[in-house]
Image (cartoon, rainbow over all chains, first blue to last red):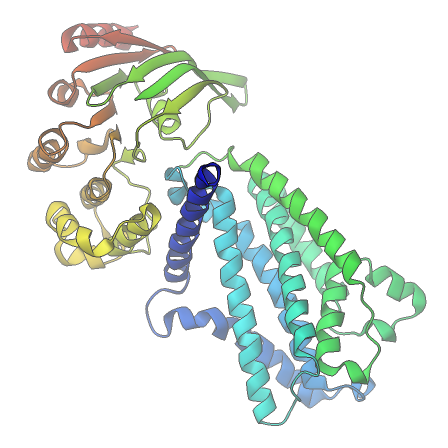
Length: 263
Length: 218
């Protein structure tokens, strides 16, 4: 038991640190005026709802065989999930330089707390919107809830790992932040936001399936309306990708973490 | 005790590596009040950050066998949109103590009144300094690291600081860095001068001050 106690106590410290950072982030980000921290999920909800409404009324002929609302909401939620985590990760360290004055706070804790907030925000808006659209009859409940939850976990894993990489790189090299902006538009188009893998020619399918988030989104849609199309995903491939990205991210955070000199 | 053993710290500049601390060794025993004098840019704040564990030395070791505070500076490193109270809550959560117990002390000590519940960006530098000091006194440490922190307040505030640090916590250690020897004389009983990356120890304020003056004029 004694051998475990240093580990246990440092785990307790880390939990405390992340808890404190979470509260701090929520207050600094959303303030305590008007609806305060509710913005956490209103922000992504508004965005997703707007896009979904546009798509719903446009009724693109090609996708008539699949539920357009569910198609839009899954696409945008999954996009927001990894894009928001990365975006918030980019300023994570510079915005929190002051807290690095405390020895028991390290850079990784800041990333973790920001990632938790983003995941919570997107997930709650996703659930909220699903319930609303269900209620008004624009979409049906998911066919396989387990798949939906699992897809969300996988996409969060992907987002968190990517956030570590992009966050620490753009902290270190300013130019990387600008490059990422261009890259993220490209990834947004490729992410499966506006297509299903089965619509693409075989060569195109092969290409887009190189990107891990496409697998996550296909799984998410499979969970929602899997009976309406043939989903293409390989969770083993996605897990390997996420694992590699996460390890790379942790290495980069560790490498850049001690280079940051508070103020 | 804190043991600092042959610590070297370099920073990259455009002209190559700049060695700020070049093999610094000393010990801090419990209850010792250490004053470190040095000109601007001699590495005082670097030394404090290393002692506080915010940065790692390039070589050498720092061993802490007592609890050491975060470096207390007059600017405090606050997030402007948070209130003084938010900052107190954050610190208390971070160090695992109850906020409620500390509110009366911080209210009394910082003399911020209703401003304690206003965003820190509305504070004057003196108010920030008082808040910073109050927050670090709210958490108990064996050793307090102070980086010119008390230069912000007025004479009465400094007296309160002195009471909190020297009278109420006479068994604790203090490491105070400053370029201003006046305060150090009343707070400290061991003196060091930081010059060319090296620390020189003095038992008396006068000899430390003489050596420091010499370094100022060179």
